[in-house]
Every structure is written in structure tokens, then in C-alpha cells.
Length: 445
Ligand SMILES: [Mg+2]
Image (tube, rainbow, N blue to C red):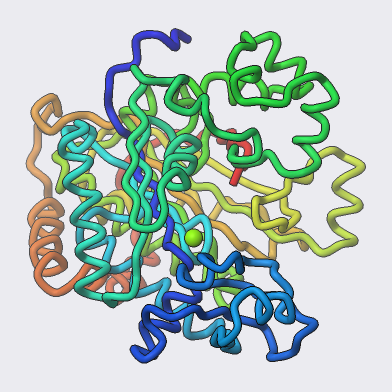
């Protein structure tokens, strides 16, 4: 893979809410706006702050500061017991507000969203406009106290780094032509996936600065990290794309031609029924986006990750099968891809999804799905699509177009096929496709 000739395009936006919990409190309580404030688990001097407002940060209070210490640093600091329910509600509302400007592909955490850009959206000036619209939409639809920093980059790894480079209310783009020098001034710890332990290990091998890290070639990176992770990082830091929006490892060319949506399930949805409902919704969203951007797809892949109990994780570890999600959840994963004649209507794609879904594994270690992702690969521009010889017998294309109009008018998830599903249970699948197991990528966030 060449890392030199990447065009100057942004494939991903990473949105990171600034001082999220503290900002939600300032949104809920206008009297706290502009004041130093910290969110705490319980009001006691011995606990630590779980979030601090920008006004409190100016006094040196940050996440992890002991409450007693925070009071010394900033006498008069407002302490508030956090409400996770309230933050989850806001996170949801923010995702919907972002969706209005650009559909969210992935929520890596409660205060982060990732959008995959498609086609001309990837041009830097358009990407920038979308980023500004996202900020406006959050401001207008959710609240004036909520600010975010947005990173624009050719891959997810760099987009996350960029979102961290300017706070609050930042907007930073990392263009392939400016890489890696645009990140040479950062600290090693600014790299996602490099925590205290990894940093110590790098230091012990003589790497203490980003400049030293960036001076290494591929082999140097591989032996430094002692794994394929070093190789990946080498490419990511130079603007290469080696994974799509749902974390599948694919070639550079394939990333440009794929569209993915994924979701970490809320605890109440970690059941077979809950995960199906989410997969169904993701498919609906992706299919609508496919049509909005004028593409057809010839491939649909689904990925599910299952949370393991401690005993299951121990048994599986002996077989070398356990992965660790960025959330720390020990899990096993499953994935499958179907290839078929290119289409863009929701009903056909839904049939494929149902068929894939019915083949997911059933054992005891596959009962608690916590992550669902779907990816469409082999995207084909509408004007290159070969029309079928016989007209679409069920007017599936018309039906999809009508749904899109209604959803655009009344909100993204207004119209689903949920009501039609039971009636379709017994209907035979009318399209032919092949299914192949899917490789899914590593987690770094
Ligand atoms: Mg944040």
C-alpha cells in the first residue's frame, strides 16, 4: 500500500463534546453558566471530580482532582452530583442534532460521535462546512451551553487526535499532505491507545517524543510495538485508511467505497431482541444515506460483539479468542458478509440483513450482544449502476424514495419497516447472494 499519494480529503469527522457532564449541568441550570463547576459522584471531600467546567479548569481543577483539593484550588466551586440518566438523554439528543447535519456512523462513547463522509463531502471545504453545521445544530437544537471540538481527517484514528487538538469549540483538519508533520508537536500520550503503561514501555525503548516515533519506518514501528498494531499506527499517522467506519480492516480503495454504521448498545438493549432492533435501525439509516448520496451497494456485512462473563472469558482466553473492546468489555465477535446484485432499496437490504442475522452463533457466550455494526461495501455510483432488465416488481425503489421524503421531513427515524416485518417473516428471500465470514479490526479507542 502506498502512503504517499493520498488525496487531500477528509473521510471522517470526530466530534468530542467539551466538558460534557459539566456543560449539561450548565445547560440545565443557566445560573451556573460562566461559573466554575465540578460534577462529583457524591458530595464528599474524599471523592474525585468526574468532570470540570472550563471555568473550573482555569483554576487547575480537572477530571480526577480530589474534591478537597478542588475546593482549595477554586474556593466557591459549585459541586453537583452527576446524573447519568440526564447525560445519556443529552447524548442521545446531540446524536440526533448531529444526524441532521450528517448521519452519525458510530458513538465511541457518551460524549463522542463519528461521522463518515462520502463523495464530495470529503472535499476539505465541504467537510468544514458540515462540521460548522454540526456545531450550529447542537447549539440550536440541544442547547447553547454545549460546545464541541471536531477533528477532520482521512482516518478515524487521526480524526480522534484532531478533535483533541483544540478546545473548547475547536475545529482542526489533518490533511494527508501535511502529515505526519502536523502532529509532530504532540506528546506520545496524545495518541489514542497510548496510556501510561505503553508510554513507559516506549520510553524504555528510547522513544520519548513524537518526533522520534515519527522518524521510525514500518519495521521500526512493528518491532517497537511488537505487533501488527505498530504497522497500522505507522499508516494511520500518515493519513492512510486501513479500516472502515465500523472497524473492519480493508484496503485504502475499499474505504472510499464503503459506508458503515455501528452502535454500542445501551445496557437495556443487550439482548437478542434489542440488538436486532438496533441493527434494523442502523440498516434503515445506512440505506437512506446510500440513496441520499446516490450509490448502490453489492455487499452488506454485519458485525456483532458479545459480552462475556468472567468464566467464559477465561475459557475462551485459553483458545486465544478473546478481544477487549475500548470500553474494557471482554468479548467475542462474529461477523458475516453477503454479496449480491447491487441495489439501494431498504426492503432488499433488510432481507439480506435478516438472512445474515439468522446465522449468528447461538451458544451461551453469544447471549449478550453489546455492539452491532453494519457495513455496505462495493459502493457503486448511481450512474454506473446497470439497470435491471425487468422492472422492480414491488416498486421497492418508489417505496424507499417515499420513506426518505417522510423521514427527511419528520425526522430521521420516523418511518421504519417494523410494521411490515411480521408479514414478511414467511416470505421467501427473492434475491440470491453468497455469504462469507468477516474479519473485524482492532479497537484503539
Ligand atoms: Mg469530551
